[in-house]
Amino acid sequence: MTEIAQATEVPYPTALRIVRALVEEGVIEREPDRKRYRPTALIQGLSYGFQNHDELVVTARPHIVALTQKVHWPISIVTRVGNAMVVRDSTSTQTPLTFNHYYPGWQVPLTVSASGRVFLAHSSPEVRKELIAYYRTDAAGAEAATLTAFEEQGEAERIVAQGYAAVARTGYSANPGRTSSIAVPLFIGDALLGTLTLVFFAAAMPLSEAVDRFVAPLREAAARIGADMLKRAPS
Image 1 (tube, rainbow, N blue to C red):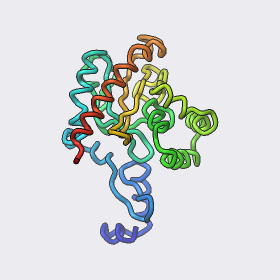
Image 2 (cartoon, helix red, strand yellow; image 1 turned 180 degrees about the vertical axis):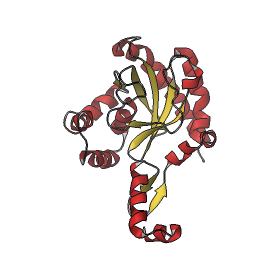
Image 3 (cartoon, rainbow, N blue to C red; image 1 turned 135 degrees about the horizontal axis):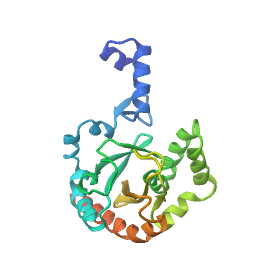
């Protein structure tokens, strides 16, 4: 913090307030084992053009476009940035079956979204404990209930066993209550990258029907993306 204050030529208390605000927004994060800060992937969301050069986005793009052509609903690549899930790429502009276009940088909550729940469930125990501890400090309502389920009711194990998470009539979207979502984990080898998420009109079909129809193609697409990412990885 002292170096930041000196480099920006602002008083230490001002620098501290700015850094805390940027951490809350997910733009920067504190390094785990020392009192230093670094930018997060959310910085990429500030420029749509820069997103196009991201290896995950470049690799996944043809797969999510093909999947949207098959199922017609928009598909998103979502990764964890700090304490939120952030859209890295989306096919919302490729289909009329959407209320809004979700461009890179759009955030969804970690604890109550399908993307966040899948990510939490498949995260390492250490990462999950860290995230839950963060939200436990001020979580309320649905978020607190989700945390309790993950900690006490075996929610993580259930999601891992079934291979997906689904949320009906999401309240955090640009059109609250009008869409539902299904998410599956996205891996490269054993490393969790994020999620592959499908959003559909809640009035179009029951959530159970959507699960029956879309989980399999979502998982197949996620597997193909992971395989392509593994091929790109340095040997």
